[in-house]
Length: 161
Image 1 (cartoon, rainbow, N blue to C red):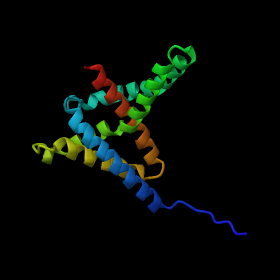
Image 2 (image 1 turned 90 degrees about the horizontal axis):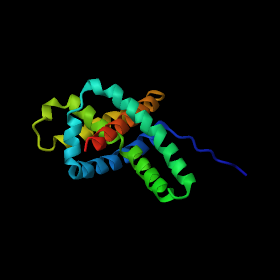
Image 3 (image 1 turned 180 degrees about the horizontal axis):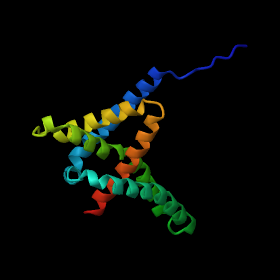
Image 4 (image 1 turned 45 degrees about the vertical axis):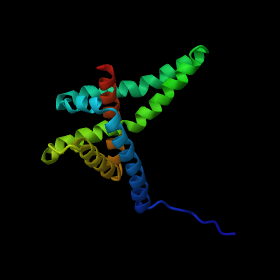
């Protein structure tokens, strides 16, 4: 009896990243139409705010599961805990969207007057993030920082309403 082993290749990672990138871009495009005002607020973020947003993102990353767990243990807060945790999972997934937009905005001065500039900024910025994610070790660091920064940006936009 022979056993076969499958080893992931770099091309497998590229293929998986392309599918993940395409799905996130689709979500980003939908969000850009639904949350236009939020993207206008994100456009006003400055480079000096990045460190504080990463810190806020780290706090959100650590505290929300802890708060959800405490709510879950109370009995009364079970439904609120489940809703909070589902929103947390969604926030983790979409956290790269505002970061992609921000990166695209930083490098996208040439298409600034285009009426689709929000979408173009997101597509270009997310592409840069996904390309960097393919680099071993660097990709994990970039992914972690982009999630922290994205959670911080989402928190600041939601908090400012």
